[in-house]
Length: 355
Ligand SMILES: *Cc1c(COP(=O)(O)O)cnc(C)c1O
Image (cartoon, rainbow, N blue to C red; front, side, top):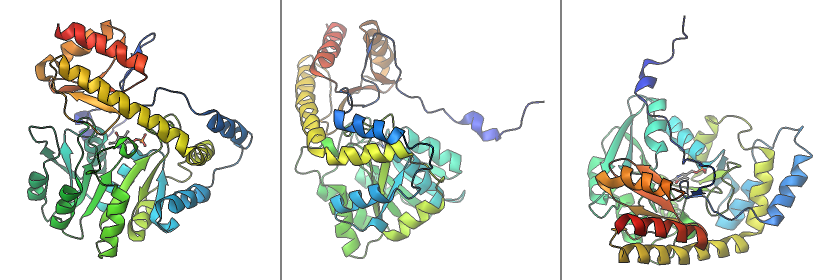
């Protein structure tokens, strides 16, 4: 006899990670191409000697360092085993089967899967024709059953970001008992002054008594720790407390905590790398536009090519050129900005496809 699992799991798509192909350049997972900083590797090596002990379940030192950096109380920070785990905890902490999670679509692949696993309903709000979050449609989609809204800005996979005015208009329109989570996995790559810092917005909203605004960030992207799994939530204490109630103990391992602290200490160096990626992003996008591709303006470390029905063909073509991109069949391809050499390889593949 086969074990009986939940019948609805069959209908659930698995999360598809970016592929790794031997000998090919991987531009599929929005990772930083350069390896970890030597100072971070040294800290990790030193921490390895202590792994017979459980980690600090509350990640006290890391939480304190984040709180100091962001100008919030330690009680307003929760860490997780990647921000994707915090996404799940947020849904678990706010929703049961009667409730709805609202998010833009297309957006982060994990939102629908995590929502379904928790058993809540998904409300997906299509992006605008310009591949941006449709604020009016999102406002219109809020119902009495809405408990949680994910606002992914810059949006994965399209790279578009909300302006301060748009974000504030949205927050103002949402009832104050609905949690608005600004997912800022790519915040460190933003260079448009119109695009606000979500933590600044959240603090302003808390000061006005709006305790329903939270921010998610991660060490996986700009800080180069994708393999270690650390992310954090900045939220009012009522929210961080709720999120801690549904956490799996010791989720953030000891090495990850130390590496995250060492990365915060080396933040200037890591953010300088981000600025290089931002410069490359401008170059890659300009070259793609010159080749005739449609490329929405992007504030993240990737570009989005809305190729529609040609996406699968483009994906195959790139694989043949030893470049792995992230294709969403029938919709588009997301391509991470890598090193200049990696980007050149991708651009020559893109040129061969268009020509
Ligand atoms: C990558 C990503 C995350 C989560 O990354 P973790 O590695 O789990 O911290 C969250 N949100 C978005 C939009 C992302 O692209």
